[in-house]
Amino acid sequence: MPSPGTFAEAYDKLAEATDKILAIIVSAKLSGTYEVALQSVGLMKRTCRVEVVDSQWAVMAEGFIVIKAARAAQAGAGLDEVIDVTQKTIPRVDFLAAFDTLEYLRRGGRIGKAGAFLGSMLKINPLITLKSGVVEPAGRARSRSKAIERLYDFAMSYSRVEEMAVEDAACPEDAEMLVERLSSKFPRERIYRSRTTPVIGTHTGPGLLLLAILGDK
Image (spheres, rainbow, N blue to C red):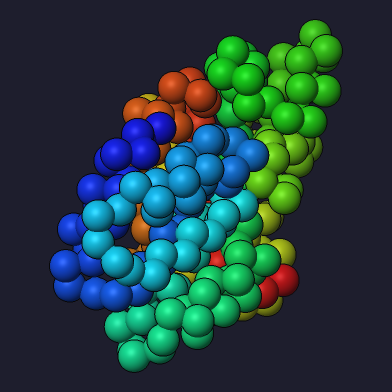
């Protein structure tokens, strides 16, 4: 995670152009980044109001919260209003992720309640999500194709989709297959497509396929 000095430097640079900063951080239960971001405020050389929010999410579920907040700020909302938008968006995002194995999450110590899967000797494709910032099991599938079907069904459970993203770790063919299917629910050109970052990939291993949504069930 970034050092306190790195955060303080970023805050000070932003403070040259503004007197209000909002930092929306990855789930505090997954990383110590939130605490570092909070503590770094006291290291600033410039005077500026800095608010730090625990998104309780990661990957593009967190990304959608940031985008929603940024759009509110660009539209002229004040900091308190943007924080309100952020807090109201947090419960409206969700994601479902399919894995080939939970071994990498186990090694990284971020398995949460999904550790229940590890006792199974069956060859399964585990599905996970985050609940209150912690990794939790969301079911299992007996094959990769059935796991992708579960991701599709997850999207179909929404009555209204505002944003959608498909992310993968070294399985672009599966991701494109999912995007193609999802285009019947949501415009293909509006589906964010990305590869997970090296940090995320380290904890998931290859084969991660993730669908993140901002919307209403």
